[in-house]
Structure formats: structure tokens, C-alpha cells
Image 1 (cartoon, rainbow, N blue to C red):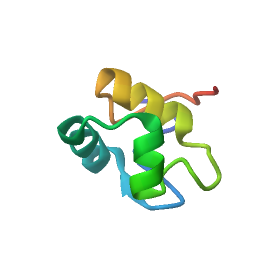
Image 2: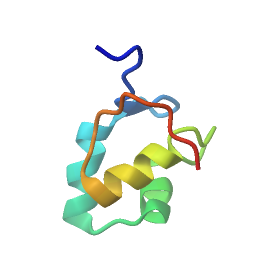
Image 3: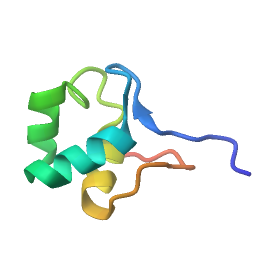
Length: 67
């Protein structure tokens, strides 16, 4: 098992499992997610995860992603 599991935007406490279907349903881009939810717009650490989530639908990450 991996040492880390990242499943949410920490600043907004929003799980990616909630964000992914919402973004897909509404056709959101990263900018839309940030504007509508505040996720990725505070510390910014979840932005790489949000980008991958939007591109692939992945909602659980076991690696540190950088821009």
C-alpha cells in the first residue's frame, strides 16, 4: 500500500469524488472548478490533482503531483 492517499481539496474539504461528477455534469474546466467551488484557489496544492481529475476522472491519488 502506498504511503499517501490524496482524495480531496484540503482548503475547501471537498472530496474529488464529489467534484468529479459535478465538473463532468456541468462541463467545468479548472478555472470553472476554482471559481465555483474555491478548490484550487487557496493554497493551490490541489491544482495538479484537479487537472488530472478533470482529464481522467481519477479521484484518488497515491503520488505527489507537481505542476
